[in-house]
Image 1 (cartoon, rainbow, N blue to C red):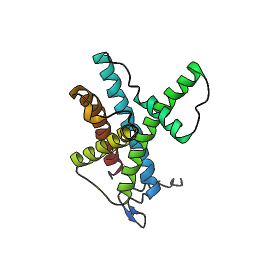
Image 2: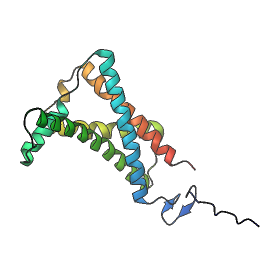
Image 3: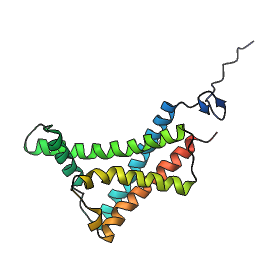
Image 4: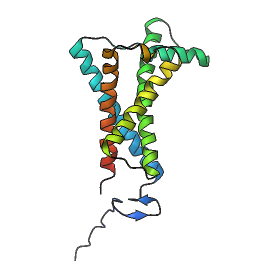
Amino acid sequence: MLARAPEYDWGMAKQTSLGRRGISTVGWMLRGAAAGAAGTSALNAVTYLDMVVRGRGTSSTPEQTVEKLARKAHVPIPGAGRTRDNRVQGLGAVTGLVAGIGVGVLGGLARASGFRSAPPVGVMLATLGALLVGNGPMTALGITDPRSWSRADWVSDLVPHLAYGIVVKTTMDAFDRP
């Protein structure tokens, strides 16, 4: 007689002491990080497509933010010339990744606490979260002032962030399905 292999319980659709589906707070945080990473990929893709379509250059605000934060924190960025410039550019990109993943983690914490929203509300919350976390520090440091942006500036900022919000909400909802 053949022994039956034990079935793996994927922890779906059951109530446990950890909450619905048995997913811990850390589990939801990790799912939020994954959703934030997916949303950041969408944001970057839409941004790069906009650059291709309109022939516009990259924004220097992430690098300016890194430079200003480093000065304020009295933390030198090592290197000279192109080497230092490349490090600053890399750090600028990393700050965007951290912001996008961080907003996703906050969404995961909200899920862990039991918060659920209708799709339009969730998309709006994720979009606003990314806008605030992404643009807030640059505005606070005086690098940009959204009040002075043109309509084209707003569109080129809002559309990628909306793509982020859609992907984050859709991904988090997918994690919640039985």
